[in-house]
Amino acid sequence: MVEFFIRLFSQETTDIILPATLQTLYMVFVATPITIFFGLVFGSSLYITDKNGLYPMFIFNKTFGAIINAVLALPSMIVIILALPLSKFVVGVSYGPKACVIALTIVCTPIFSRLVESSILEVSKGKVEAAKSMGASTFDIILKVMLPEALPSLIRNFVVLTITLISITAIAGTFGAGGLGEVAVRFGYHRFRTDILLAAVLVLLVLVEGLQLLGDKLSKRMLKKRHLI
Image 1: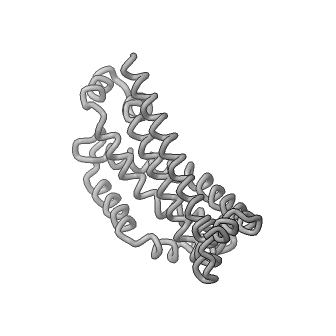
Image 2: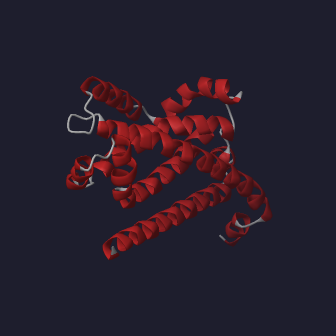
Image 3: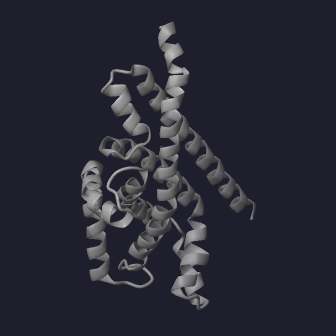
């Protein structure tokens, strides 16, 4: 047992885990803003074009919603495989962290779109109606009423998105994306290095817990400021 813990915190383990951690952080931090952008656009569009939305478009809403649901229904591993040709077209390679960003975005954008839609649905309809009665445009209602009012819920969903991205990087690691997932499989599982496998898991847990604590703190601060106002 003592020998195991010595290996767990050895220089060899650090030399393997540290670059993999940086690759995972790279994938997450690049994919997150892209996914947030498209998720906000798609989620807002689903809300706006609903039959009770600001600009009802029944056919568009149902068709677009069906496409998002279809991607959601596919296992993440299948989506990653299907995204490999697109990754090669966009970034020139179908492996490594850069290629993984494309797959991460495709997997997580539908998830975040539905989360954004749910957050906006929590906004009081009275505030939206008040903005409409004052002549605010649809664009102004989205940016100045709906999204600010939904911000505490959106922050919590940002955290869910980021944690999901971290978990997907672990899956993508089995397809040569790099990061902690690849290290856990290639070194930990295939080479029977339990110390490296456990080290990768511990780093993932620290990342997830850190993000969760940060998200909870920001969300509570936003709610506290709103109550003071």
